Image (cartoon, rainbow, N blue to C red; front, top):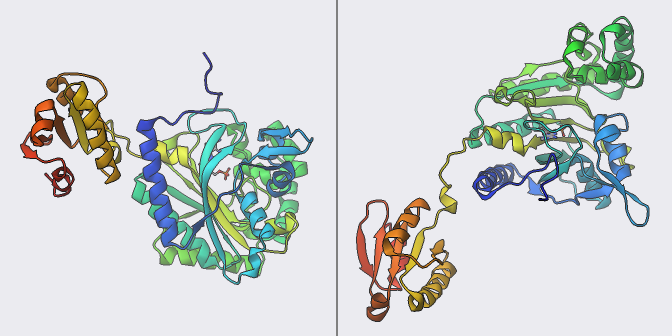
Length: 417
Ligand code: AMP
């Protein structure tokens, strides 16, 4: 039997209802905050991610699904969304519009990571990006909307971690300091970190491996190397968070794995998730547009892992209201079935969620099924009913039954019978 590829999964109907609810709430809140949806292609030229995400990151070095197209052009399934959004911004010359650009996306991303709980090779992200503003308040506002979203869908306790990685000049100064400190601790680091000491020392701070942690904890903090404008920006950002009563923890080693970030970085974690506890990652990426060959453009955004937030949402056993039939039509006998299917068509045209029973069965067994499906009402369509035009409509909540005409059904459902 052919099975789904390792690290990918089916979202079956019971679960897709939760996904739809989460996505609906996300769209609603993002729209309230002035974001519009953008849909970019699922594959792009490999160069976009190589440049935009950074050759030295794990994503580009080890995790991308890259293949040659038939014309030998190298293509890659997108591992993240920001590079594509910035590419679209530059390609469509959005900068000509004086407004800041606020967009969001929802969709699958692809990374060849080792699958485990909360980590897949095809996973879904909700992301939002603000292009054209370097205001620290927009950063706090984006975090405010994220918290509203997480509260609304009910993920429970989360923690907001924030940091600033300054400008490239601050980072150059910090890298030197860091390299000195790392050279004294090299023996306590894993082989990957030893390599990073030379290629990109900042990324050592990002290492999640347990044996490296004691050495990492004693490294200098990037906050000591911020220049005046970056320090001011960070203080203002924290001030905007405080004004909104948003609790946070400053974590100087939060540097994120991607090279294009500058100044503010943040992460939202959840204790309910185990090892893969990051729900959201985000930050400022003022350097990205230039890396992609465009004009300098301020950028700030986040990406949230939908599988992880959905894992935390309450998932009851019963089908969600939107998937339950409002009306179960129980035809009794073959000629009745033909008429009942036309009745179902008419009710559906009026927006009623109908379940038409295709299996010939007794009334008793039909009622049992309607009960199992948690249908609101049952309409009994037998030959007698068709002759007289009077149909029993049963309310399943309390078993009450009234006799209605075919046309009356919709208004009776509407007024709560
Ligand atoms: P990143 O783009 O790496 O900053 O990731 C942003 C968010 O996407 C993370 O906080 C996770 O919630 C989610 N995420 C990243 N990689 C995976 C993965 N392989 N499987 C599931 N979710 C992921």
